[in-house]
Image (cartoon, rainbow, N blue to C red; front, side, top):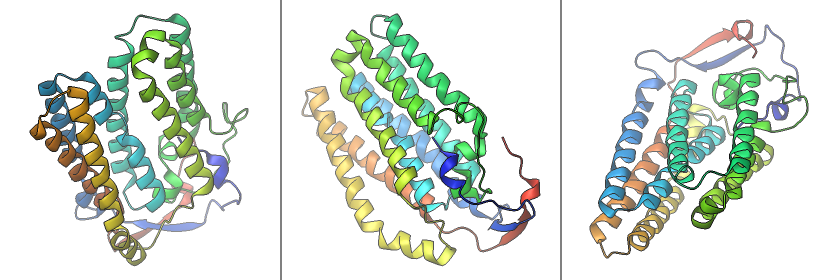
Length: 289
């Protein structure tokens, strides 16, 4: 997911101190813990709605893309504590992969497709191992880790190997004719969103704002974000009615409302100001992957 070469343009002395929010019992972790029960509740609602609607496609589409939204919020704002972001991202990406697997494995096995999918995810995992878990999840933008030039394989031979691996894996599913016939929009959406992450990392400047600046930004963008998430909820509600070929306003409305509520919960949790208390640390205590 993360390309360390972007942040390797200047060297930081090992003794250079930096500031980051204090994460005590009443610190920033407490106010972000809402994202875990919110995620669990949304997964449950989406699963229940899909079950009553008798639509696997509804569950796959409703649950397959939330980790991209988390990546954007964490990268752009840099306000969420790193452990919270890692927890949420791992959870929702796991849900997305399970949703994808439920569709992919239901199709007839295609060994060429499976080999490409496995190669793509293997490249992703090797890149994550080279970076270490903290830098994989935007440790520089979120936790103020020092800049670091990573030269271990696969970064020694390719830029953005995590995103390239993802695109290879999702694109590889399209080699399976049975899966491609029904699910090609799903695979193409994943490829496009990974391209979007690549563009984000290359061309979007992370804010890493101060507490006051972050609060102003969150207030400034709250209404556009609400409108965008409301539109997404309405679109998914319409998709629910179309996929189920029914006029079940209750089911479609429940899923649409869940999308808006969950999206807005994540937005406010990931853009809320950090605690005012700060502690000074030495970069000597940081390990490099």
